[in-house]
Structure formats: structure tokens, C-alpha cells
Image 1: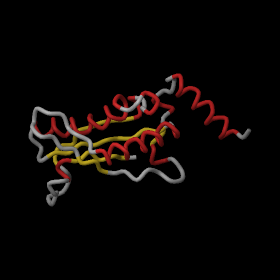
Image 2: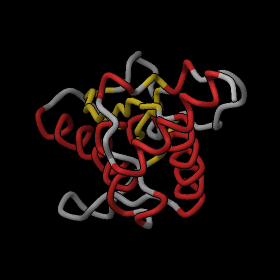
Image 3: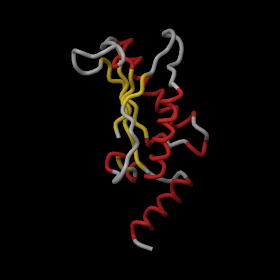
Length: 144
């Protein structure tokens, strides 16, 4: 058995026990080979008092991402965006990012979840650039 295989087996065993520390996680961007094709998830809600909804097709994409993250013991960053930089929009941006984190760490079946320390969620406020579209104002951006 080569050293890389041994390290992967040991990491998998530690992950199964939940004993992988923050310092042992790597960025998913540094994983060699094919990575999941995910960058932006549109999150909408029917009113300011309701939760953000993740569409079924995006849920499937996030399940694929979670499997990749578990397999490679890697972490991601989720950036939430909103209409502008007001405090209400900043809160909505943070909720969008948190919705993705909660889905990956709590809403999936127990065997499919990732650990909370594998997902960093941050509300960014307004989408960068002056020409943002209405859709860009309602996204959570996944940074591998």
C-alpha cells in the first residue's frame, strides 16, 4: 500500500469518527481531478418571514458536492448575496449562505452530510459590480 492510499484510509477512518480537525481539511479547489460543477445557487422566498427555498435540481447538485467533500475531506466557502448593502439585505445575504450550509450539514440524510467545519458561510450584501441582474441578487455562490 502506498503512502497516499494509507493517508486517505486513515483520514476516512477519522472522518467516520468525526475526529478530523480544521487544520486537516483542505480547500476543495486543491483536489486534483474532476470537481463538481457548482458555482451559484439561486435562493428565493415568498416573503421576508419565510425560509429560503433550494430548488430540487440544486439540491441534487448539492448532494453531489457533499459526496465530493466527504470523499476528499475538503472544505468550501459559501457567499450569500442580496439586493444592496442595507442591514436587511445583509441579513438576507447571510441567510442565503447559511441555508446552503444547513442543507449540507443538517438537512441531508445523516450518512450524506458534511461536518460543519467543512462549510464556511458568509453574507456579502450586494453582488459585486454595478450591472448585477435580479438573479445575481438572490444567489449563494459556492467557492471550492
